[in-house]
Length: 97
Image (cartoon, rainbow, N blue to C red; front, side):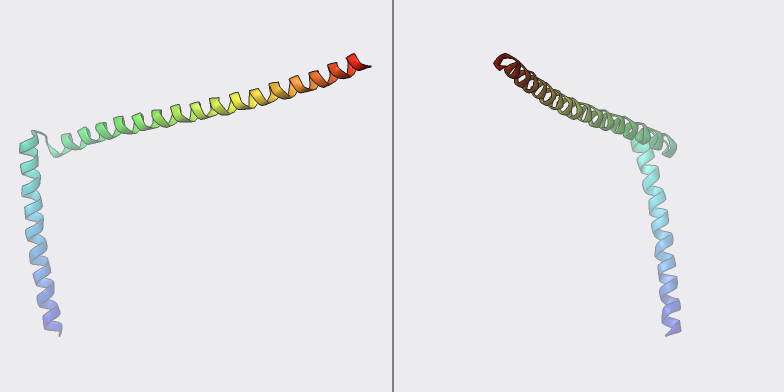
């Protein structure tokens, strides 16, 4: 039982080493294909993400501003309607008395 576990551990370690080597080769191929080092690719990716995030944030801000504008216009219309009603009631009372 312990022997099998030991063999499996060795097998896993061996495969892990192979995978690490393949990952390294893959990174080198990507660097060559892209003409960028790992750090340059990382910086480029971060810049692209930053631009995307700023764009999404700006869109969210515009949407919230539009929503706030609609709500404030609706509230302003409501207040104006109430003021007109009050004035109409007062004027009607004043004229009829």
